[in-house]
Image (tube, rainbow, N blue to C red; front, side, top):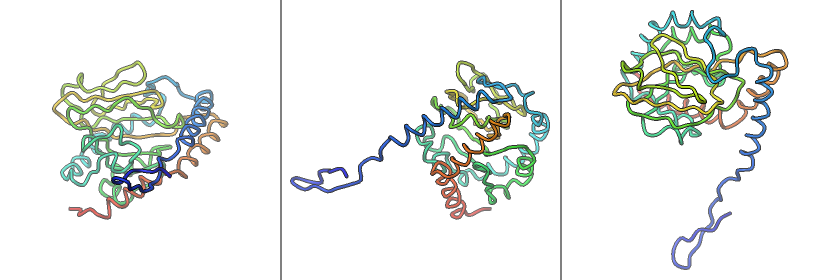
Length: 256
């Protein structure tokens, strides 16, 4: 317990900051897992990954217009879409105000039924894709910068399907490692988010993508490791807290 001065001559106890030892240990463990997963990956471990590595990409891109139609309906009620950090407090460093909103349909394999019901065609498409662990609409406000950060595990590969891309796409970009790319409407961008990455939208328009985390293709040993890694994540507050927050948020909504 830490002692804090309340007034002259008066003290009170409060909880000390949580020890960081467990966090540091967790990062060491995850780096070990990631090194193993990289050795057993059946696709490139480069910052960006070629679309041809995933056979389902053309089929998903062919449905971009249908997905965008459901997105447009959801975005008519922006007050019903939470900021990223309101769902996942772990993201508070990179998500500020209402600048990065997320409409979540899946969290580490857990389906968010209320949100899937609001976009049933998109939800059905996600269900049909192999190995989707996380899925949401990621809505980035004009002028916002997501600072450099890293994803939690090489067990997954990130996919962004462009749905609303600013007209001046050159001023809306993502850097992964030492490479910079721009989104395109109706096209998938795949990358390894364990590399340091950042996003900047220097335009007056919002940028919206369908954000997917899909299972990295691995050999048998790698698949065994991934199952362990994902089970560990599901057992932690990193997953449990967002699930509880999403449920609480949806219970408080007055849906149209």
